[in-house]
Image 1 (cartoon, helix red, strand yellow):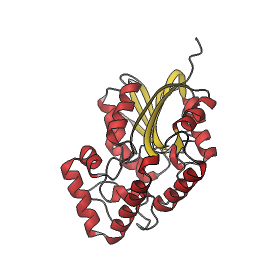
Image 2 (cartoon, one colour; image 1 turned 90 degrees about the vertical axis):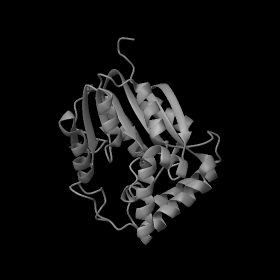
Image 3 (cartoon, one colour; image 1 turned 135 degrees about the horizontal axis):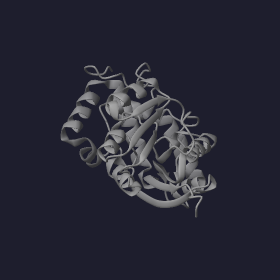
Length: 271
């Protein structure tokens, strides 16, 4: 499925719909908000981070939706970091002269230490194994100046006491459905990872994981956006199969999935 007009291609546009990662399949369908807690949780996270006049680095900005929102909040500067060349091109077209997007891994950005006041990452740690999660969190810690904030929005497991066998079953089903080795964690586990890296937890928020519900899509995409998605899905059998497969999985495990956002502070050396 191609892109319209002069828009850069979507990431993984060279892969068939049957094997592409789930979030990029949803983007092919026309979905623009790809975060587990929706636009509402993204805005709550950004509100809590108090971004005005801050130097911001964003890991894996994807389609650039959150980048655009942050620029509207009068941040001092924006640097996006994405390892996908197509994503870099798309986000640079969104931010224009107001920011820079570099082609690098979130584990090793090449940016200067202590150069950011806020690091933002959404729906990307979930896609990493334990080693990858730790490496990215460590890089965020390195980039932040003392007192700086790491703001994340990820897929969570609930409750904290979820049965280990159920959690393992859920992760395997997600990996099979979205074609990415997704490893969501409980609130306790997410906070624990951040604290182990040296962060102090400042704020935690949650919203239902309702990525493919009609109510969430009307809120996130608007009526016109929902019509666009429905039209695209109706016209493409492979796309329809993947979207419905993901929807069934999300619905089956909806009692144990949540969107979770956390703000963690790098300790101030003066304290």
